[in-house]
Structure formats: structure tokens, C-alpha cells
Length: 412
Image 1: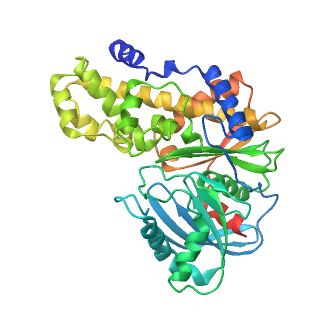
Image 2: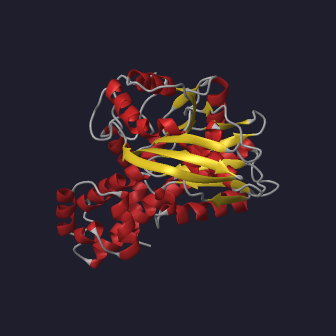
Image 3: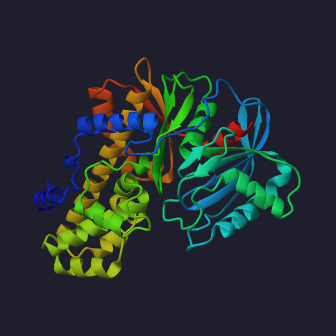
């Protein structure tokens, strides 16, 4: 145990020991109920109007769009004999990630990306990674963009209808039918469709990448509930969380996401290590180097923890620097995993999943599957708390292109 770093992070409030798993789970459950009953809870929860499929989708072909935190993907997915195959795929920069753009420019770019596949199907599943109220026709009304996507004036946009209007303005023939899905909901549908024959006691979706979100299947309501867990506000925050939030594009929004997701963990490590260096817990050379370097990234952290090399290593001037930076990184990811464990456990308790058999947790995102840091820590926290203490059974499920397959299945 590195006592100076442990003590510093405890005093700063960013140590995982600041998270009481039982208390935080019960508080989150209370807020989830409030959010569903009266929209007055400390997060935004949206019924998806989409049920879990009881069997394979009808045979056919559908267009799948995926507006994510970094990329806008376009695919054509075909279902034959219960199996999905992707017949076309392309990836573009997500509009609004390269600087502020207008709503009309956002729609223009999206339409430009979609036009090459319009002749391949008239059914469109649109994966949308941003908070949106799902309307009775399964379109959605945008609450706001997140993940540093800047499109002023887009709040309240009816996502599919306005894309269709832009396509028609540009000369697209025919009519298309749309289904809008949150990315977490789409991933859950895709994983469930792809695991036909496997029986689960309930189902949850988890996205962990640039951002993070969770959903669960509500048996009583017969539909998937999108938790929009990124927006949860009541987890205990450290001085570094408050600083990072104040410097973000949308202060006060997505507070849980800023405490845990890949887009922000590097920034938290940077703020914490800089402050620890000012307290004399790193060498003078490290303190000078990290100030000059600027914010680190989750990818930098992963390289360092895998290999001991990369930008993190270059900042260190002594073996003690390396050891202490590694400890800062471990503890910030331990806290992220503890928070993720709270969210998943609350979703399992809310939905009654994982009692008679394992619940399916459909996990999606490079931050989960490709990182050496988050997933092992989350699994350990879940085993110890949700498993041993709460007696819930669960299984993390990986499905390649789950959200594209789920979007196409919903469209069909």
C-alpha cells in the first residue's frame, strides 16, 4: 500500500473507499423510482417502447445508423435463417465533435452519410447515444447532446423525422420507417437476438466507452428502460470531479459519466497527479513534466498499466514516480468500477433479474472489452457485491456489432 497516495486520495474524496456500495445502491434505487413515477429523480429515465425479442427477427434487410460519441456509423444488416450479416458498413466523424456546428449542418452531414444506402432498404434503425424521449411512433425528441458534441439549438429536435425531412430536401425518393434506440438499448437487443437459445433471468445493457449508460428489461412494463445513468448526480464527488466538470463543455450535466467514463478518466488522473505533485508526493521533475504535457487520456493509462511504457512512463523521473502514478491510476479505476457496480446492481434489483438464473449483461464498448483497467475491476466488484452479498447471478455477454444488429432487428 502506498500510504501517502492513499491518504491524499482519501482526503481529496476520490478514493474508492468513499463509495459505500450498499448505501449508494439504495439511494440510486430510490431515485430510479422517482424518475419513472414523476420525472423528479436525480437522473433521466426513458421507456424505450421496445420489448426484448421472443425469437429471431423476420428475414429481411434494414439500414442501421449509429450516432456515437466519436463516430457516425452506417450499416446494412441482413437477417437470414435467424443469423445476422452486415452487408455494408462505413464510419464517419460524429458531426459536432470537431467544433461547434449548427443544427442544420448536423442534419446535412448525417444525410450525406446515409444517402449511399437509401436504395438498400426502407426500414431504418437509428442508434442514438444521447438522451431522447421516445415518442409513441418510436421516434425520439432530443434532450441535449453530450460527450462534448456541440450543436447549439438542437434541443427538442425530433431525431428521425428531421433527418427524413433533410433527406427529402436533398432529393431522396420514397418513404422510410424509423425506430430510434438508445445505444445501450440497441446493444441489449442485439446481444439477445444473437444469443437465441440461451435462457437468462432478466437482461441488462451496459455501454462503457467514451461515455457510459445502462438499461434493463422491465418485465412488468414489457419494455426496456433506458436509465440514462450518465446523468445521475448524487454519487459523492471529489474536488477533482468538481474541477473537471467546471471545465467541461456542459458543466452540471452527466456527472456520473464524468466520474467514470473513458472520456474523462485520463483528465481525473491528470488533475489528481498534478495536485499530488504540488503536495510533494512526486519528484520535482514529474511535477514540471505533467504540467507541460497537458491532460492524459484513458488510452495513455491503459498503455502504461499494460506495458509500463508510453506518455505516463515518460513523465516519471524516478521509480517512485512510476509506482505512485500507477497507484493513482488504479484507485481512480477502482472507484469507477465501484460506481459501475452500484448502477448494475440497482438495475438488477429494480428489474428482479439474476435470481433464478444468470441475468444477461450485454456489455458494449472498447473501454470495457479492450482495456486492461475497467472490466476486470468491475467484474471483481460485481462478484463481491452483487454476487456474494446480494445473491444475484449474472453473465457479461459480448456480441460483435451488437448495437447495429439490435437496431436492424428493431427496425424489422
